[in-house]
Length: 232
Image (cartoon, rainbow, N blue to C red):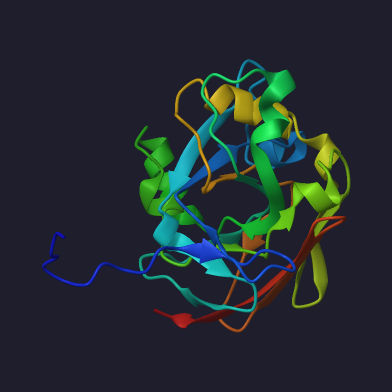
């Protein structure tokens, strides 16, 4: 058996509704500009030709109830509330018609973003890594298995900041459906169990401050709540 120079970190994982077993997380993919109104508020339009993506490290994962430290290197940290897809089977160049068959379940997630760094890097045509792949920036609720809730194609998605509604839309407004996304992404990666896909955020994203409470719900899927802590 191989020895390590130091103890490997624990495997990132998420709770699953009504199960003792946890869902081990391998990778986190994220879809950009998947709601027309959000694309407009950022000065862009939805790309109707194909979805586009960025990624976060699995070590960015968190759970509902967590306190998220306000990260270093930013003065403009934003919330983006999203439907998250959890895969449960392998997919390679899978068709849209078959794509939902590899989905294990769904959850609520926050794609926390260092907006100032995202925008400054984007303006220079650089990758978004500093803005998006941030420690503790991907809290996700317990996964609701598709075997229990089905595959939601519509339902209210809402986020409240300190009790005030900030984001409110319907997941049926996504430009690219879950099946579209899984099918398209599987043409570039060997997707498999443990892969999460954040499906994009509706309009209304905005900044947070230490002490803020974020509470999000997606009808038929679940709820997520976190608190923004002091600077890390």
